[in-house]
Length: 219
Image 1 (cartoon, one colour):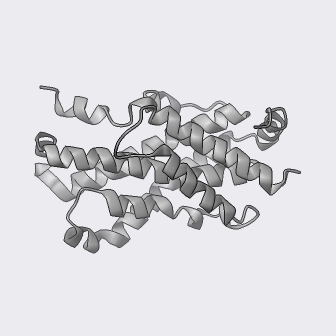
Image 2 (cartoon, one colour):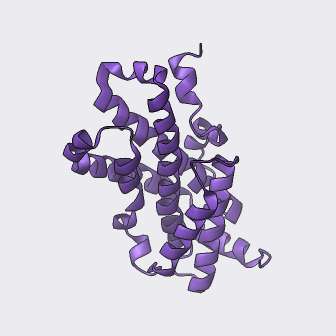
């Protein structure tokens, strides 16, 4: 039987380099580097907040939940849904920040964000799943992009709205218990994003990302 830690380490297997990238301080100076950052950091935050909340709620029963097939199935669904929501929040913020002040139209911002989001889904969740449709999530992301205020709203921490909602909805905890935790969940997720935004601001080279984007072939 796999150990408890082997089971938890299976989370979002496409993010195998999470520990390495957490320590990465190289400049984010290309579209590929931007895609890598938003994918790995979103996977990290999804893992941290989901398992952290479930562990806190279950207490000493936490390791035992990995022997319950129903809980494992629910957790497997939750981790994908929370990751997709985290990726949505961070992608919009990262693209808006990287291109802020540059002579780039909103159509280009939308297209870069869509590429980053789709690339992140396929990198971290490469296999099709009956419980998760990448295409459905991309469609929902397109609707969000159509309403995005790139010059103001997308640059604000308050725009990180999907990730706390997804954690509240999908965490495999009884609703009557989660209802007591809604404010705690929202605050914990928003607080966890602060460190990632700080990392991003230290590493982003928006001019280089914009220049790289101008060299990208059009779809």
